[in-house]
Image (cartoon, rainbow, N blue to C red; front, side):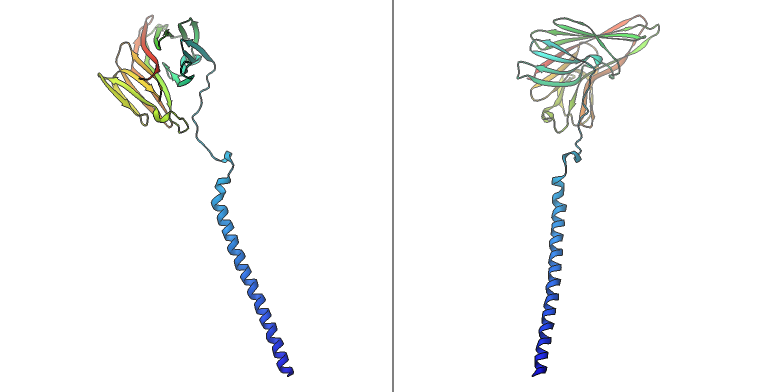
Length: 271
């Protein structure tokens, strides 16, 4: 009887110890599985909670002209970069104050020359640059109330020897970055040998014998036509920006002489 009692107690203790060990092992496995799921979930969702400052978004480098000059002609208000004698943007006041950006409109050099405003009237504004070799005067003359402009560029050789004068005109710089809402509407059009062509800003182009060059977005455009001479129209793409302009061979200017270049410009609603 006593042997049976001791045997029953021993069996009970053995079952109790075995059950405790089983429960402990099972809980360890379950906790590890749950931990793995949490780690896995954190690794998936963690990018969504990264701080905004850790996300690098490439942006177009903004222009920082030393001084911006405002000039009004009819319903247009133009912002000039005085040092480069170039148009930054055009505000069309009678069309919901729409801003048409050019960034470096009608730049006539590589941007290294430093101009200064020398004259301004109701319908014109002039800029001048001078060094020991040359003097350059750029005059924009506006026809009110239309959107046409005459651009006259005069270069005088002040040196005792011949100099080479660059013959180019930058129509503007287009921003093709994704955040620009007008990027998908922008294109370039030109007249080449009496044929009208449309070019994408997605890659660089060069075309000879261009008589008219234009750049437009969804609503407005800028068009330029040389009064005389043979020019090459070009698009020079660099990352998210594209330069649009005209170029020709340099002009050799004898000592004490001067030369003039004339352009007709239209800034306004596209057809």
